[in-house]
Length: 337
Figure (cartoon, rainbow, N blue to C red):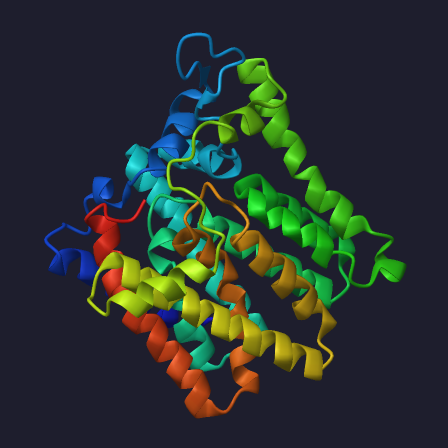
């Protein structure tokens, strides 16, 4: 576990130092609150609210119901210790991120894997007030227990992942691996993670479908699931701007995904393959969420690196560092949404 702690610390230092080098004090909690972070904090502080987007908007489509409650509930608990709201969110995110690396160590102690996992594309969203690290630790717990055929524990981890981040519902498909022995229990429990989210929104807003109503409002970012967009950005410009770096990040993730599918298919590792394909599709399917954020949920692709030649594994680890620095800078400057 010492390796996991060192890798997490190294990744955190890179992120914090980058923020400092861009002129932002890394230990000011507000510097890690951006855009959707505010929704998670308002849920933690006062629960769900559904409000009209304008005159005649009935039922209401605006508010904070488009964000799931797992992370805000933990923020609320951490705040009870006396932490400020931003720092409560950071402590939860950082603790979950450390836990995710400890689970990676249960699969492998390879340094390239740990370095890549600590600074995987989208890393800044695992070190700020966002639920990605919480979803990751639950996802890795799900995969670990599935590997050992602990179906109940796997399902509970899947439910926790879904309650933190909705795209984790793709784990229900992964849970079909070994269905003859599991009787589908992991998949059923994973989907059950949706119940507390919808129930809480129903109690606090009066609408079972408050999440979907919120998602129907006009898109803030435009569609992000067209994979042609990142490549088109590279053709016209090679300047170090956020559009080009986003494109390189998507290309790096897609390349690792393609390699992982090939390797896990060759090695008949059907469990990891059953996770990778639905997770990759889910990451690029949400048209209302920027992919440079959802790509953080694909960090477990790092588990393919020990099966690659060492120079290739280290190349991916190094590329993660090279992407993390500018993307963190764009985040603290509020260039990323």
